Image (cartoon, rainbow, N blue to C red; front, side, top):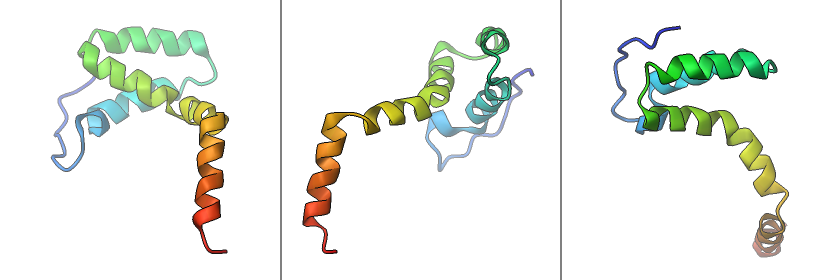
Length: 88
């Protein structure tokens, strides 16, 4: 995959532009082959700016990050507080 010049969508932030999402899909389709994913990330780094690679990597790690947050005590305490305030 070579990142082509894609039309930006003004209503979306930079990190959700088609070019970034396309790069995420390109790397993600190699799962669970980590070696192949690293090869693709290296290929993308030749075509994307460092800031764009950062967004790609962040989006690839987003689900894992959410799992970590959900398992934290702070998150569990916040959920408990919200449930206490909610009429059931």
